[in-house]
Length: 247
Image 1: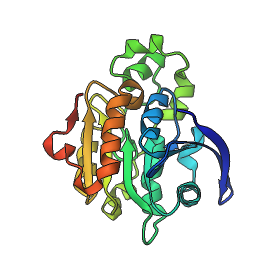
Image 2: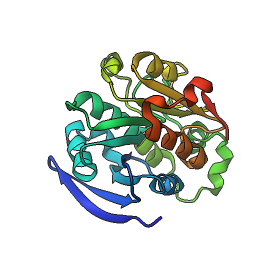
Image 3: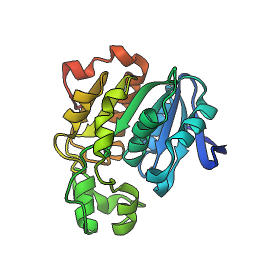
Image 4: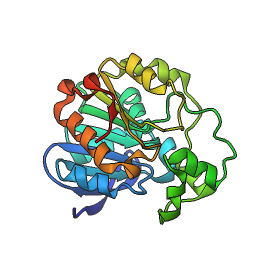
């Protein structure tokens, strides 16, 4: 897919935006985009996709600024998607910068770490990071361009768990999909059930044989479940049939 690039500015924040496709607007908050192009191509084949490049400062981006940027490119109704720190920001955006009515009609959190992150992520070396992030750590040898060590930690490490944020999960009123790799070790085991139990209209899907970098390891599986959810929202039924996606 061909993507056009342009800067967008709101609330004093300027980000690069990449746009492609047509149809329902979808805003993707990109904090870490390595290996995501196949996913972007698949989504742009079905939707009008806007990728907002947040970079390593995603965790510090203000939710209100994100709201204004998303609305400036996508209009009055759109799906909001994020991966890892971008997913954390998407969640905070919906909760901490509310709208009435809310233009976010579908929220997708891919590998979020905002709620119940793993407790033992300090002082990992490159090999240990690879084993945390990939279902098969030895795959890193063939993954050109994947950041290493401290650089990777800066882009991917979760912040400390925010108990106040978890307590506000019931405020998320829009249909929500939370997708994890079945071997994700960046969050506590109870994280998926915490989202499912506390967000009123929440579906949780596990992508088989993938870890935290699920969009890089299984792009077609992720694209399939995300596209199905955005198109169907409340009638999305994958979660009711089975929670593990193994195409």
